[in-house]
Amino acid sequence: MSPDHRSTGMTPEGSGSGRAAVLDAGRQAAAARRRSDSERCRRRVLDVITGMRRTRTPLSDAEITRRAAVNPQYLQRHRDLKAEAEAVRAHLANDRPRAATAEAARHDAALTVENRMLLEQNAALRHDLDAARAELRALRVRDLAAGARASTPQPWTRTPRLKNCAGSGTRPWQPPDERRPICWPCATSFNA
Image (cartoon, rainbow, N blue to C red; front, side):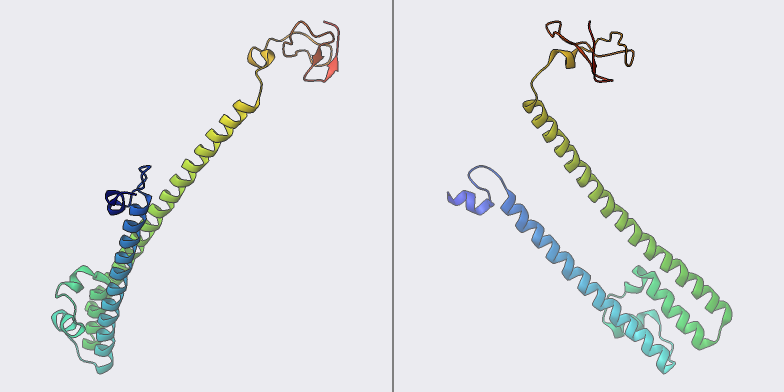
């Protein structure tokens, strides 16, 4: 194999499956790192909110993000966590209207998260369905091609013509050189 084939991950035949597999593995590893980093950030913010509830100390959004060591806009992007912090602040202040508003925001944020998760699952299911349909089409084409090669052409299967029969009333046409034609629907022989 020449050096240029090794550098691109392609074999002399021209398939790039090795390179594609490496790229796909890299993408999956990066996505796993992002997910674990996001989960760690989320856990740190939830720990700060839990501490705020335990110590009964209302903290501002900026203080929560500072203590959790996350981006200052983190709570703006994660509405469910912001709603959770607002609910704790309302509870600590014993402010019922503010608590009701925070609960509505928490519920709305939970629905948004659930909707996003369902959309992702729907997209994954659609992808799986499309892959299954493509595989089924390929199997049908392969089976049809195998069936066409295995069968020998017969004139009566290509041009059916019906004649009356004593058993069923009609029958497919058979070649005239047969001595005793058979009625295919009722499987009886008769004189033509």
